Length: 222
Ligand SMILES: *Cc1c(COP(=O)(O)O)cnc(C)c1O
View 1 (cartoon, helix red, strand yellow):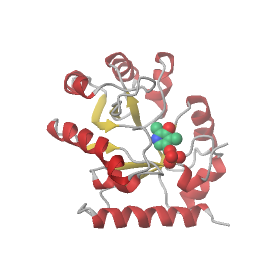
View 2: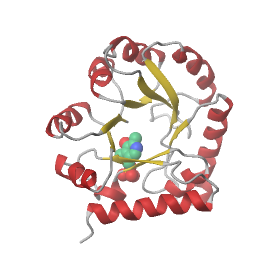
View 3: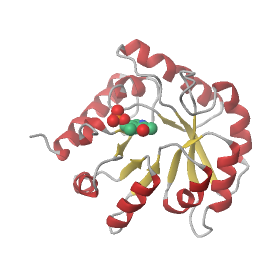
């Protein structure tokens, strides 16, 4: 049986190899372990193996696990769809939110960030494959929204996030990431949250700085 520790090592090796292969600085890509639907024990196992950044998609599920894991020095990232009535809890209980896709949500997160905490790190989610069913802004909207969000006092705009349509082919995996990286670089953004279990090498080749890995680390979700 493959353990979480072994899988974590395999993923770290894959990241290192991609950094090396595509002229990226060593350790320039952060591994975000996506633990949605997985129990607190799975997070604890990855933590014991040195993993510190975890991503969750569903607020209630995340809050429950955060309580169970209160003693662990985890950096929590929210990567799921955001409803307005959830912004206060997100602003209170997370270090990062990757899935911001409107000024309204950003404004609420800034207003509701507790004053004793550092600014909330955020990424703007871009619907890079222009899929009508997916959330995210279009690339055209990115410059204006960045300019508006930079002015909000309790947020720190870090960069962009995307979930492109799955592609089996390596070159096809690269092309939306290339476009997004170029758009982000023009705006001098530092964080590129893209790459999942199926396409992390293509994402790293195109400049990813955070890969969000679920299945390859924790196994299939039911
Ligand atoms: C579930 C999820 C992931 C992880 O996907 P895997 O294919 O399981 O690695 C990454 N990002 C987001 C936004 C997700 O919802």
